[in-house]
Length: 282
Image 1: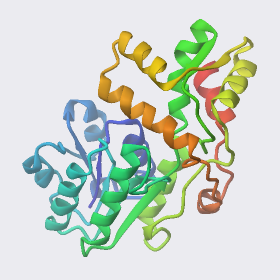
Image 2 (image 1 turned 180 degrees about the vertical axis):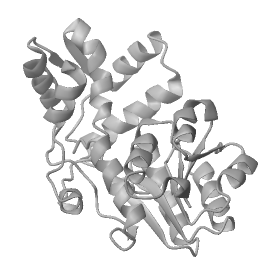
Image 3 (image 1 turned 120 degrees about the vertical axis):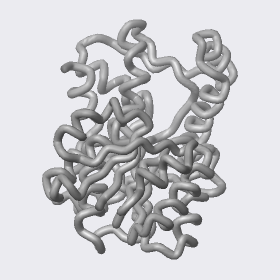
Image 4 (image 1 turned 90 degrees about the vertical axis):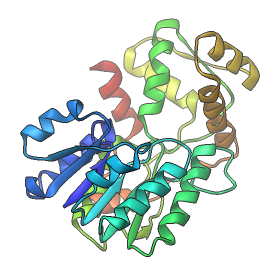
């Protein structure tokens, strides 16, 4: 049985939907914090069990009978992922897959990518065949930030750098292929990225064209941005996490475009323009 964690989230749900096209439905299981959010999957015949990274007993129950487990990464802290790896191994999983990040590096300026690097080391030391999917930066991130910019006409952010924005759909397809075609993606994968590099000035320009009104990219110092974010009610840990993204971008940590994803999918990777057109003009 293939078990997918986080299946009530956007990425996990997309993976399950792809798998359902290729795997008998009774061979699919999901681990979700709130089973009520996966009742539709249960109605389709998917095994739905409660599994919470903060509750090891629940994860052990959710992983029962697993042949493969896809751990959809959650918090920046690698410890919950370490626990999930151990429990998947104990459950008898013959292969463990994990959604890592294109910039996974113990020396990264972004705490989450340092955490991904630690989890990759845990996978390598687990003694179980594994795949660490080095996913590109989700293209949903600029979509989220553009929502307020559409109202104000200004995209106010710290100084950044290029990102290879990557569509959820493409990464979900890659994960499904990795689960159904063993050998296609083993070990730590190359970066699975979109086809282009764009910074937030480019994002603002593309969005302006799509919606037909000017969005101006405004660059502010990190601390000024943080003060404004805190005034808006953003938790301080989240503000600091976000600033880490911009610091890493300035160092070029996300400025990588790799051909692996389109070759794997057998089609061009989805462009940022296509994602923004769908999200902003639907």
